[in-house]
Image (cartoon, rainbow, N blue to C red; front, top):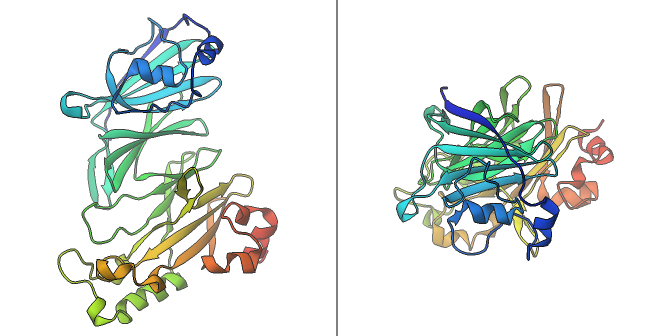
Length: 343
């Protein structure tokens, strides 16, 4: 992997204090901007309550696509310039404000690549869609298509550590992350693939799907043998291999928003998520909504300790009856984990 990176450290003196800027805001400093994108960098900084500074490495009039991370001691912004006709431009740019030292660090990245899909490498250059911090590392999510992405992993001084395929599904406090693999967008099905990236040694370990998965094997066999002939999908947009059936992280919806049903517990080194099995690609689309018996949900619970990976699975409908809980977060407490794994 090669990268062209320019890093510069620039002194910055606030024209206004952060407190006075916050008080001047009519809305919380969430970084969210209502209205049509793209937005100028000046507006983005205002949305995060970051006062503008002549010494910052930013063209405040530039229109951008962005993602930000804001904490008490630092602010990080990853962005692409947006040109004519809302075209996303390269390179990827990242800036970090050390709020304690009041200094800026800036970096640019181009010609970075990774394995976008299994067996297929490509440029990790697209639209910034996500920015998270895990441990001491920043993970910049880049969207390549609605079903594919990559992640640039940066140190605190914005040096590129590695480039990962997929997107961040969950993160641990020690910097390890769960990666959700990319798929070809125009494909009959989109099988879920999850892996664990450990930054301490750079390893990536596949954790889903797993070998000898009884519930998954049963569903594959159902797709192979139980679909009524008149309901079976036919044509170019149909999948022939039941092992490549459509499955994804299930969603948990609250009045405010929906989010994937996935959780981690740092203290226990554990992970839980719910997978939604779907017959899309095997049953005609006009029949899918009338086939609720095919919409299975399966819970997977993992313990990831000392490099070992062990898991248990069960139908989501059994969660409360067997373990007395109704959420994936509650599955990861020590008492429930002991019941799940029998020790």
